[in-house]
Image (cartoon, rainbow, N blue to C red; front, side):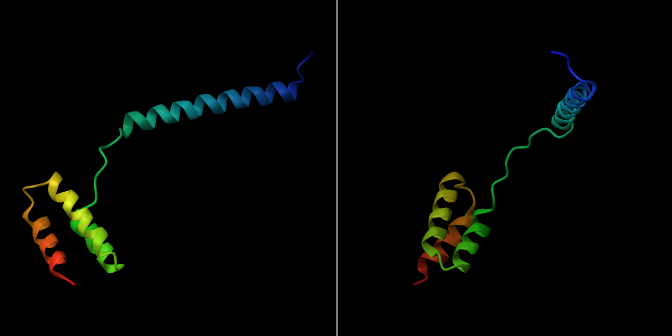
Length: 86
C-alpha cells in the first residue's frame, strides 16, 4: 500500500509535534522541579469552617494540627477559644 504525500506529511508533522511536546515536558521538569506541597495554615482553615458554620469540623482540623505540631501554642489557643463557644 502506498502512502500518499499528504498522509506522509501528516505523519511527519505528528512526529515533530510529539518530539517537541516531549522536549517541552522534560525542559519544564528540569527548570521547575516539583515542590513539596505546602499545607494550609490550620488556623486559617479553621476560621473558614467557622465562617460557614462548621465549628465541629474546625475543631477537628485544629486537633489534628495540634497533634502534628505540638509546639504551636497558637493552635491550642484557637482550639480552646472554639471549644468554649456554644
